[in-house]
Amino acid sequence: MQEEVQQLLEELRHAVTRPWAVMEVCGGQTHAIASLGLEELLPPGLRLIHGPGCPVCVTAVDLIDQAVELSLRPGVVLCSYGDMMRVPGSRGDLFSAKARGGEVLLMYSPLEAVSFAGSHPEAEVVFFAVGFETTAPATALAMQQARALGYSNFSVLCAHVQVPPALEWLMDQDEGRPDAFLAPGHVCAITGEGDYGRLAARYRTPMVVTGFEAPDLLRGILMCVRQLENGECAVRNAYGRYVKPEGNRAAQERMKEVFEPEDRHWRGLGLIPGGGMKLRREWEGMDAALRFGCGKSAHGADEASGCLAGQVLRGLIRPAECPFFGTSCTPLAPMGAPMVSGEGACAAYYRYKRS
Image 1: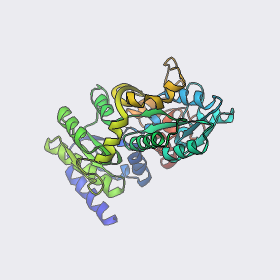
Image 2: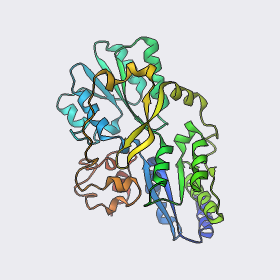
Image 3: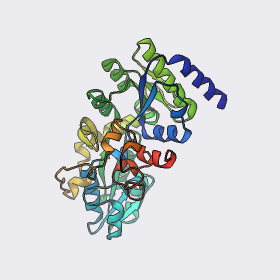
Image 4: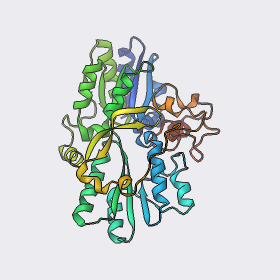
């Protein structure tokens, strides 16, 4: 692997003839880049921008507030991925709700929540469904399984979001638009390349499906640079061992059966047309927000006063440029969501790049 990395770095040095900015979309890629120290190895003039590819980080404050509200209701057990526990809402986070007596259980899979619902018929079990297209098929499967088993006490608070509409939103902005994108490998393994190819053609912006190991990342960056230097704009696949052009058709069908697109507020960005998923009408009986009449809070600020998480998520600044980074804002006392998540850029910098 070391020889391959050296070869790719050498090819990059020869390929770059002018300044370029490439955005890695996925938070997993951001953490890999930071942990491997890849940015420091890139040739002068080639800059990486960290994008909004952290589903925990972009989950709307309204949804965090609804999850907190549900966890505190008598008879309700809220099941959540661990990353969501410390994400601050306007009424605190799930960790503080649990400390106040809320029923919050950490789960690794929505199927665990279905199993819990089956063994605890007296409880109303709500799964807080967070994630990109990567995790949405598992939520859909869990809902299908709960329905097939007759578990009427299982429901979902749906916070799933879709990546391509967010990229479209970013490319429509006047400020901070990158020259090319590293498309998220795990998402594309589900969705395929189609949406990214359409975006590349529409915005004349190269997109390269990229993985997470050093050779994957450097190869993806190199393929972006070669397109930019040659005036090309297409989708290319640097992660072919996992991602097929058509994606995972079975997973897509599961999502299509249960979910449909909706406009969604992305924390730190704003309203993204088609950027969220909601349950289709025939599945609304399992919509926890409807079942329990969760009211949406009046939308205020996404983060604590002064927090620059939104600028970090848009790639306008680096985490260390925030005046609160590593002082008032740490993983144990986060001001913004990117410091909480295992895929957040601020958390990556805190772990790997603090001087």
